[in-house]
Image 1 (cartoon, chains in turn red, purple):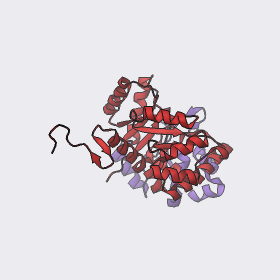
Image 2 (cartoon, helix red, strand yellow):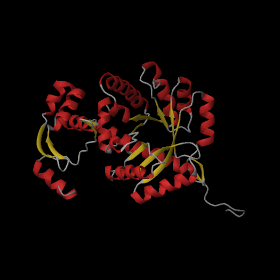
Image 3 (tube, chains in turn green, red):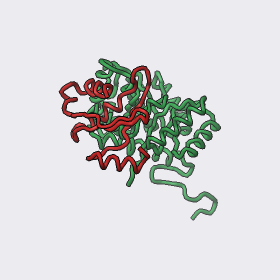
Image 4 (cartoon, helix red, strand yellow):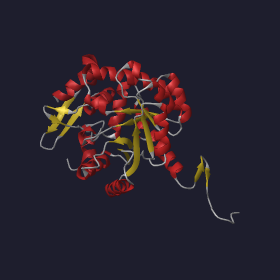
Length: 245
Length: 85
């Protein structure tokens, strides 16, 4: 069966519809079947509907995504309570250990991202991985910082990513590779993203899963949960009414 | 081609790059298209080196791999099926 490729992090410039269209057309041309765009938490439904229509006209599926950058645990919980049912993918940028631990154990979080280039501020260790594994969260690795850095900075980034990838694999935490592209020249084919994952010692098939199987299962699971007839995993409301037998 | 070699040596060092045995076979600048040959074992290295290029001189670019094949004849056939090259 043909793989479906997913980019869970496109930075679409939604104020510039021409550029948005170009990026979506490029994503289709590169072989993506589904993209998720980072949207602001207060994006109105009209804009989301418009982007979905634009994606449908280009021939690509679209998922809504929100990126949370909370400073405290309470801020994270508040954001999740307010936004979880509005977006199909929820990503948390972990800027402190407390936030990282809470995000990893909360089942409402889909993606964990560690932005800092400082070994003491990258919190994806074995404890974090164990929590994430139980809560079905994935580790997000973004390719844009790898493309735009060079020299020592890139070497250091690759070193951190290598360590985190090993921990994720050991604890069965899915790795999701995304582009974080904000320009068309940041965009790469899915297989190229998988090849770039070999730089931090993921093998090519695992890299392919990180741009197809893992992100796709996250979106599918969340779409199922967001349906009105969903009650719990495996339980759906089939019929509603006074005389239900 | 220099850019690809530079990228390859920066990522894998001179020793690693030498294993790829990279050679330029054909280049059509007007079409923005090139054919490269490398060792079977060096494919992932060359693809990564190509994918990581973001700039050539002042221009911001992305280089994409259109097709990979075991022989140049099969590669040209594959490319002609997907597009007119």
